[in-house]
Amino acid sequence: MQSSTPTRTPTARQRFAYLAGRPLPPDLHEWVIADVTGPGATRRYAVRCLIPLAPILATLLFIPGPWLIRISMVLLLFLPFVYFLIALKNIYLRHRLVSHGLDPKFLDKRKQSRLDKERGDYETRYRHTR
Image 1 (cartoon, rainbow, N blue to C red):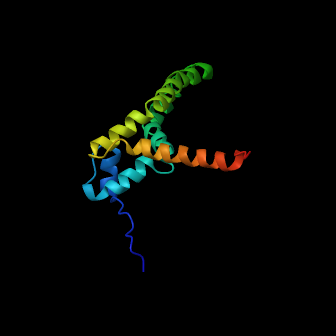
Image 2 (image 1 turned 180 degrees about the horizontal axis):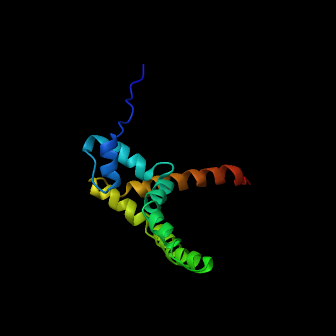
Image 3 (image 1 turned 60 degrees about the horizontal axis):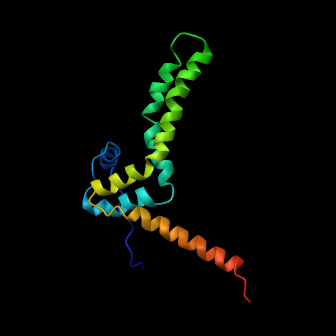
């Protein structure tokens, strides 16, 4: 018999509201923390930001003209968008935590635990005893 209860997940309606920027109820805060700081958080963040851009970029491909111009228009929007997407990732994820009333230091805790693990692995592998 397991003593831990599984983390509750939001309903489809709650998830859509969450994707639109609305906060989830307090009983789903564990899920929000896992979504923002867990494995795959960067991938989910990127996909959520790139999906609304895809139709805009696709319509640029239908503008009459040479393909070189069409592709150039798409790249002129896509490359800076991706650059700022990556640059502002931590700010957006912190905002996501704060909007749910959670401590934004959760992002730092996950990163610090990963760095501590890497440091421990390094020390066990390359420790030289004299």
